[in-house]
Image (cartoon, rainbow, N blue to C red; front, side, top):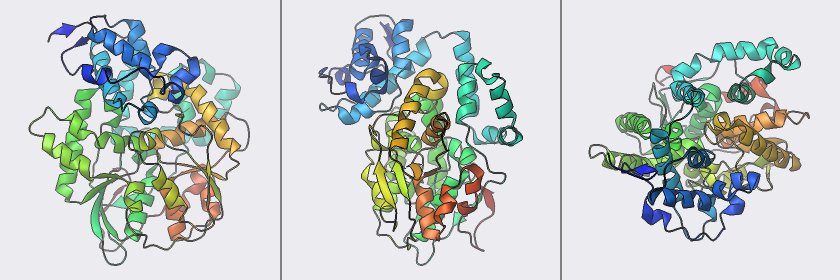
Length: 461
């Protein structure tokens, strides 16, 4: 494989895309890392300048790799850019080069290996549920915190402990098929995901419930794995392609019109399957077809006339735009519009709402200090709204902002996925069911079942 400067010829950042950047600076105030440090090389245009240097023959130094690593990949710069620079494609190409060609320290390699050996695999993640729930229920965390022992853990482990959400004793289970209520309007598939399925199974249950209430048969293929989003965003291109092929095959077999996704990062990655598998003649066309049928659940519901009655929910919600929903997919109005169909509910905007919360896939584990500072800023803005409930559309955001809110020392703020709020309104769950915290909110997470439904499977199998 030939090499030119920092990059080899296996999908380097494209010069034509690099040259689209006119270095105007409109991206600067949108970039979380530039906001944190004011460092030009930690801005989108600065990183694009480094890409150009690499293409012109500069070597891939540790400093250069560090600037690429510190990018959250939030894509806020894509929304802000007046020149239409495809920074999303550029950083993905560059990260794949860095991951393959940059020699990391032994500690970094071990951490990344551990993360990607566990997080994309639901079965492996589920093995952590029992020990984690025991840890949460035993009071051990309070003891360790009081003794200062948590502070002695490596930063990545402290971050993992902080963001872990409260776990229900018995997560809801989904059938392989949830039939439509009333005349069927169509047949859709549901991606259950990896982190979503294990740590937020109620979100999948609520998604199936609402889709069925709106008249759609929901097919939930069993034994689903990761969609490849975590791997793709971190430059692990081959691994991401392997996950993508599996997802494509499962939903082809399901014979559904649309594939519904309720995690922003997953939807973003799946809509880019065509680019990921463009060089694979056996899969390129299939990837394009799956990408074209992928819909975020709010995007899908907003495109169809509501059928299910919404019961009143007299609460105020602070809606947080998940980066890979708002910036990568351009879905901003639909979640807000759906929330406003609920009688009595008011939506409050978060100041500096387009700035990332610091989750960004596994960024909060790999760059915990920067992520924690961004999380603290986001938590302060959320609290300023005075809302009753934090609402967003991504499991990582829920974990990250909840962890930051818990550090404020005040009363814990309840949170929910957008579809959980809609589900509560459709089923007439009282507001108190949403405003509880942690496992207290388990009871509203039921899913519509039917006697003719297939055998139950875990809500994120």
